[in-house]
Length: 321
Image (cartoon, rainbow, N blue to C red; front, top):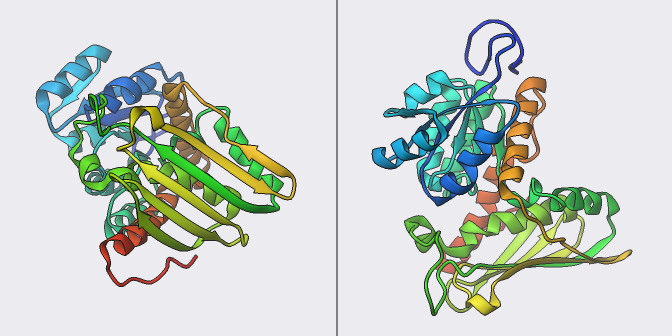
């Protein structure tokens, strides 16, 4: 089932004729304040309707800053919206996303969708069962020029290997933590779960599905993933939120039959978030699932959960595509 956002009549996941889609935001943290809310307010093709948060005062302040309604109950927000945008910790996001889908709302999710396979699968299954569109905001897949670069390299083929690193200084070993450090789930789960989805979101569309992963630990929260892909290529990803400030940075290098290609720099994250909302609206209007949707988010969770299980010493099987 698909929903035409330009059709007449009311109903779950459906906007009446000639009315712009209404978008509500769940979450009030730094990302919500600096990226999600400004991007939703600036979006030319939809109306930013309101905010719900676990901290009522913070929700009221964020809603007031953008002149939108503050909601005391997320289900009331779902009833008023066509699309729900999430800026919540993953294991708070997942059950609320299931509820939003059941209410007929399309989903603009944050990464990771969840930190357990069962919860991530529940979100993907709910989106499918209720016929709602979904997109996971994976920055490199919506920012420019990186989004176009990924598509170009996926068409090129002939890859031999790739190496990625995403080294954040959110919790540096010395000096002040970043503005995003007041995040219990990031402290608990580290770079594997916070920035791992970004690296995988580029490696998979270019090199193919992950057929095997081996995980090992380094200093602080650093994790190194060694991956095999359906194309036959091998890749590595080095991930951390605890890097020294002088060592922080992001990079990805591809090597193949046509040479060496490096991920370009990007900027304008709010603009990228607006393009992610465009993708949700397009999927809702056409009924064609976006490849960066909840199903892809669930697959990323499977790979990360496999890596985490290896690091904890649990006996698990490799995530075969």
